[in-house]
Length: 624
Image (tube, rainbow, N blue to C red; front, side, top):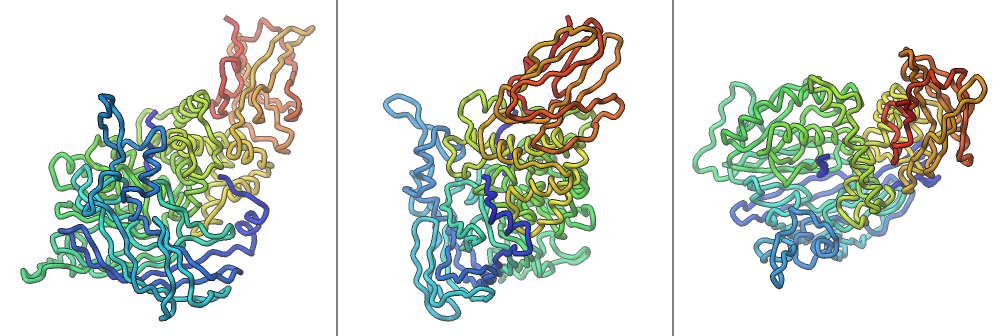
């Protein structure tokens, strides 16, 4: 999802073996759905057939489904969370006055029966036999008619009735930008079962974890609507609406009231779509013959900005392909809809009426999620920093590539936001489940900002070339899987040869901070004695730049003992001396330079600015 800020971990030994070794497995869920939409009344009816493959060693006696739309009802857990959290999402509350004082009220709380969302399930069967279901909030528990043995399949069928809620969060009708239908989290979706067990999390407006599979979806809706979303349209010449082959004219008979759109989506873990009667639809060729679709409100102000978007997005996709790996599908759609920006399989629903810069930033971020979530499908709920943070990292680099005057450190704003979080006293470890943060802003900073710094700071730790190679190997090793935090750490270790368990542990599982300082600079005979101190609990290797009065410079590198690694010189034009290592338990360190003290102009810890030292005033010694 697009970061709000402008300005958790699970690596038990068993998990590492499952993710890294030959014993890795994941479940498979193949959907066939046929849906009829009553757009006038914002309701729909559908049938679903799901072939479930149990690739685990467990015998499954129950399965769980997500019924996300049930969250949009007064008294739901999502509603309750809006009452209890200190800083509720501004899109989900409205200002009211209570006893003359301004207050905030949950928008869900006031929904009328014809405005709520719901999913009602009927006629659930397993391999033709009726199975018992129990729905509590956004979760349906199914007691199976017969257990699903390891390495076997079972077919589930059901009927579902849904109501599309008033637009409150991501999904819904008649958005703030007047998009009629934003259909995300709209169907009965099987919960994920992996090496940790079931992930049947209630929906309270955070992130997701899905089962890989193939989708075959038919959507019948009034013929005036244009649909954009996940998957490849199978009947474009019947549909028209800008999808048909070049030169083919599609004319729908007046007596035809509806059209049935048929989509196929191979090897994805979600399916989303949006529909409006007033969509403009542009298609351009992206890198490697990928079709980029742009669906947006057909009005002059919106069109003026969206017509400029394709040229940028072709460049952004090419950048991501080179930085991480090739986008594996043949289509991606940028669709005006939703309430901000949210990633889905092969598409995004995003706001579209702001500035071109804002639209471009959102589109870049959401496209980045095609790599970090919709190919590298980490558990967003438990490790939101892995998808949001890594996407922010590549987004910032891509946006920097698009501008003429490039920043030396495109991540500088992320570090400032992280320091503000630390100083606020509200930081929680990144291993915190996404739903369990005390407030929204610390969640956003931990996920987007601190998650991005995990990679930009890793450049400082093992070198930029090693991080570049790590991303590519991570993508190739774990695409179409469910990587864990341990997997990105182990990939970086394999690429660099460094030991990095300390880095994953301190940065993601604790709120330990990095704080080093120059304690003193003194003459000691014919040399200068420099004393350093470690003040924070998180250790780091140390880069030091010494600038001399004659205009020359040299650098010094202090390896971190527990890394068992020496980083390549990142500035080979400057002479570097590798000093003895620094053990974490030793809070002080000193070394000598064979120079006169008067010859020193400035000493700097980490001239790159990529080490997240929370108090930098003592990182520089300068002769005035």
